[in-house]
Length: 489
RNA sequence: GGUCGCGUGGCCGAGUGGCUAGGCAGAGGUCUGCAAAACCUUUUACGGCGGUUCGAAUCCGUCCGCGACCUCCA
Image (cartoon, rainbow, N blue to C red):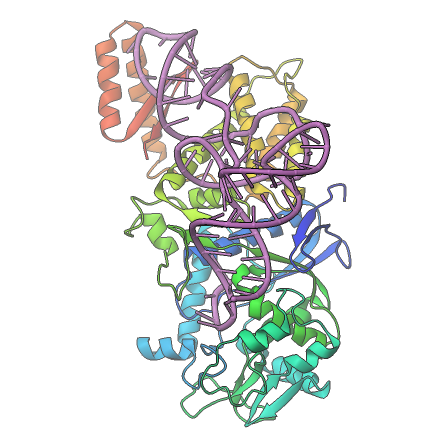
């Protein structure tokens, strides 16, 4: 492994060299969505960020097993809530079975991720498919004395755990603060302490999603599935656990506690947390109610958007910000990204037809080294893109005859752009709207007629053709030696 | 209230002790029948105040502003 990747480990709060437990294998787990309604663009950001991490690990030559769960067992608003879970609630609203809700929104999620050109995870386990394993994990935690049963529900004893372990290891919380600082919620009488969390909840009569357990009919606690499925498919500890920052506490903190208590091992060696997406400076959240759906972003059908943007433009836009920074959505920023994306893609096209010389005025190897260095520095995609743009300027200069490149360097550059733009960043060329072979032929004819007019200095006709085409959204550009055409956006 | 993070040029957004980030927009130029594209040049940015240092956007302190988490949320 000649490339040395460093990532910011949120568990140790330090940038660390990434060394897998069992190289060349890498086990990576990312908390997936709860499928009770449509994923919004903020959810997508996280999964796209980890798609890049996955792709880069593959680029480095690791054999990666990427597990991303689907939470299809509904969970309550909080441990005190005796009411319905989110999936059942939505099922009633849409008048269908809970599992229909889960299937519908899981499919929707897959469809969106496909449009964003995200690779599919190696395994996508369902929470409801691992009830037996979850019950067994609860039992293990009880056997170790870190959980207690009250009225058919099992709770994790945080205080007990904290006597021999560090409960706030990930989030930096102090258990004393948690005990004193928390709001008191109704109906938490079952719990010994407010910071304890449910491993298993007894199902009330109205609760639809329910399973048999040694403690009666109930359903698993939210945090449990990730500990269980992560260790089942990736071992303990595995290499990398990711998720949105909002999951750091309590979700991930609880995952760690459960694993240490039940399995006796740390859950994951490295933790990565992606930052939130904001709109007008405020975090996008399902509970905030400012959700922007991917479809709305693609077709512009939302008050916040002037018009639609191609999924690849959105993807490119996201990658211009580091995953750990907040990202604010605005029309201006999206439009700037759209232009930049077009510039990058055009540069890549030129790469196929560049003239070569005996010498290169810029080093292709050096550019590659810079791109690798940027990615190795905690997946710095904005840095990679900046370097790729430097390369585009070089490509354009060669195309203009103002710089030169050797055949060997050109091949390096072609591979570099192919690897980075398509494989690592996961971008794709945007399909022309309604281009077809016959359309190409027709335009070739029109362009050749215009060329004749130009040669006979009949500029009035030449300009008329260009203006008329422009009126139907096709622009002609007289470039060196040939004429190109493209659809306007 | 507790915990954590952030404030970079017109906008977006990297950088984290000295060396051009990059994109978009603006200005000037080259090229072109014109236009577009491309290329070159360009506007000398780092919230305020103090401190450490030969030197700070980068380290420390403090103040101001913004945000996240502490309850479900990527």
